[in-house]
Image (cartoon, rainbow, N blue to C red; front, side):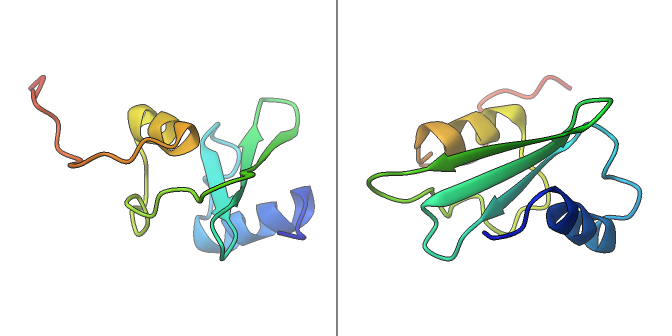
Length: 92
């Protein structure tokens, strides 16, 4: 968790070329899963959000997923652990 704007943006460019300046949020968790950094391009510069949990850890039920929906992202930050990740209804 020592990396800042330049280090995190380099990691993203290596793993996801041409995605850095799209407005996507990129999440970085530490090994103990009690710290999260979020890197975001807001149109004219980078923004880093940082959250440290005083107790507990961030849920690992989202690990391994390439992308999170807005709902999953909110649940991760709020500490909600879903019993299942399937939606009840499909809009298609």
